[in-house]
Length: 79
Image 1 (cartoon, rainbow, N blue to C red):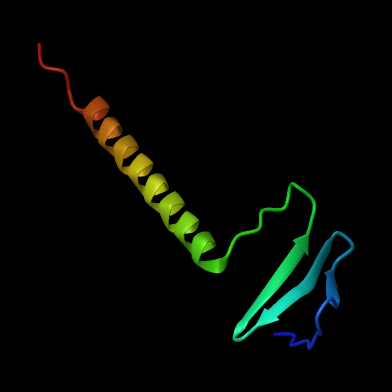
Image 2 (tube, rainbow, N blue to C red):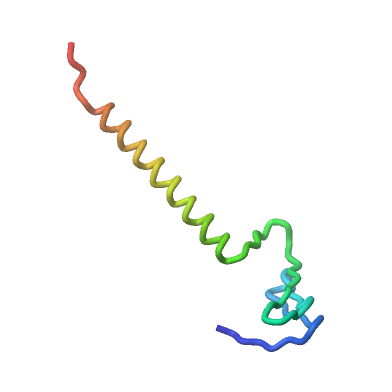
């Protein structure tokens, strides 16, 4: 992990397209401004993890449904 110290209104660059600026420091909170291209998704970590969890649930549900359909299609048809 890279650790940097920045003062109010100072910034860091990530690559050529992303800039993070310290906008305010209030008590134990730091407000950051992030400039990035629109195609870069930016989320708080807890939101990002929640999205991943929901995507995994959806993928597993889809896989379960597919497996159930596959089992039904493989059963012999009785005349």
